[in-house]
Amino acid sequence: MSSKKHTRKINKEIIIGGAILSLYILWAFGWLMTNGGSYIPESIISHELFSPFSHDYILGTDINGRSLFKVLSVGLIYTVGISLLISISSCVIGIVIGYLSAIRIKFISEIMDMLTNLIFIFPSILLAILVMSFSGQSFSGLVLCLIFTSWPGYARIARGETMRVLNLGYVESARAIGVGEFRLFYKSILPSIIPVISIHFVLGISGVIISEASLGFLGLGASEYSWGAILAMAKLVLLEAPHVVIVTSLLMTGLIISLNLFSDGLRDYLDPKLKN
Image (cartoon, rainbow, N blue to C red):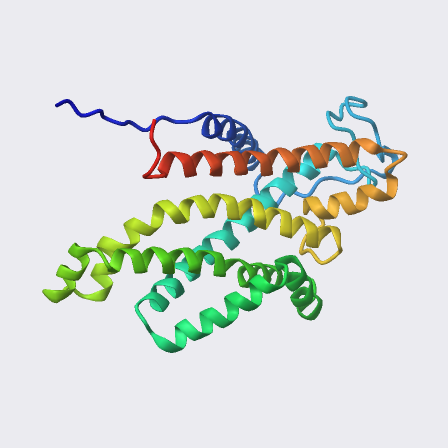
């Protein structure tokens, strides 16, 4: 009998999403290499609200007379940086808490259940608005606020995967011969969690971008270069300079769609039940 060998193929979602995402990555790296991370766009009031491709401004200017391309470039660095910081922190916290909850540490399991139920009952953006209203506009407050609303998703995935792996025969055998919990986690459980967590991680970045932009739009962000803050400014001159809203919205939409496409493709690629 001949057995049919199934091979994984990179699907079109990964290709399309990765191609769009790579453009943003190249843009961000190119900007950092040429201008650094502390560049502040120059404001020339006499140049306010120039249309795209006029007066040597490829995307026009904003209400403060700054090059819209430069403002959006700084905003891209800020958005990507804060989204990665929040997502990585939430992922690490979620994996640790989910694992400790799965191995039946009672008080951690109870606290996790209480917090996750609380966070999932209420929309995360409303909780973020509530927290930011009390903490005020600050970078650290924004980061802690979004971490607080993001980690439960990672914790639930880590908990479920950990409980599944702990019931496997080789893990039970390893425990029986005295393998320590840390080594067991590092060698057996973490490799099983990573593929599932990585899908949620990519999707979570797009969620953080949306949440951060929403808070910026409402005036609760931590930077004037947040794409949400740029949109809030642009709505004041929507009729005079619609290009600011259009360009900013298209760029933010493209980044979110590319992350969602890449996440969907990654899920199909890593799905062990997938049949080609």
